[in-house]
Picture 1 (tube, rainbow, N blue to C red):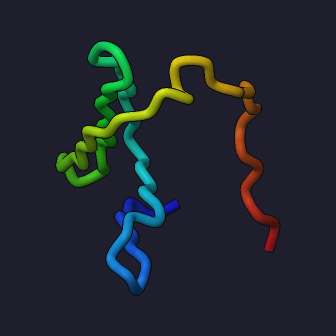
Picture 2 (cartoon, rainbow, N blue to C red; picture 1 turned 180 degrees about the horizontal axis):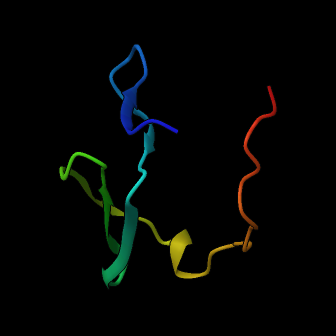
Length: 69
């Protein structure tokens, strides 16, 4: 996996990949903060609103299997 922040052709956020971790925190009401830590020591931070995250649908997943050559 490679650290990256990707945008669509229209300039909207498409995907963030982080190899060092992430932090999601409710800042009150529908306000959220999300930060991704990257291998090179930098981070990507997002502030956004979402009422649906107050009652998320989620699942705990096991470790990713590496592709076989």
